[in-house]
Image (cartoon, rainbow, N blue to C red; front, side, top):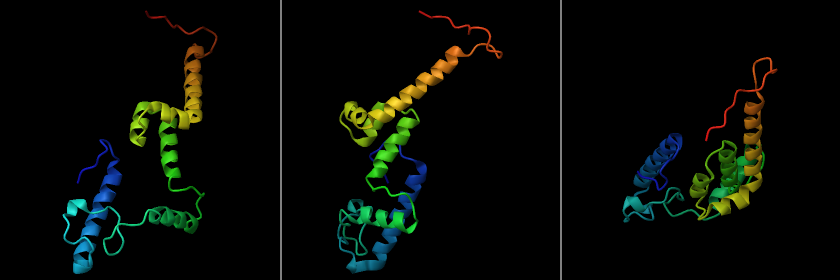
Length: 151
């Protein structure tokens, strides 16, 4: 099994592989009732209806909304997971070019336009951390730090 993304969390790959094996078993159990029984398995969908047909566009977001309610979690849309993922990556100071690529943005400006307020927050955090480095002297804090400008 291959994925179009170069780097993918191993935990998720393992889950997808297990799901694919479960789908194959279900396909075998359905026999002639499986809608796409004559097609090469490489063309199978990741998620299907019980008979192998592709799921409707709203099925996954509807399931996710019901899952949120059932488990009394803070409401977020399924698409909101994409924004949450990007925001977490930005907060972890990941490279904006890499984040833009992951999100499928053709330009980093799209990413910075959408997530600019999060990026500014991280930039301020980095500036604060650098300020901490510059202002730290000795343990007593009475001497200036020994920093040299390197050209």
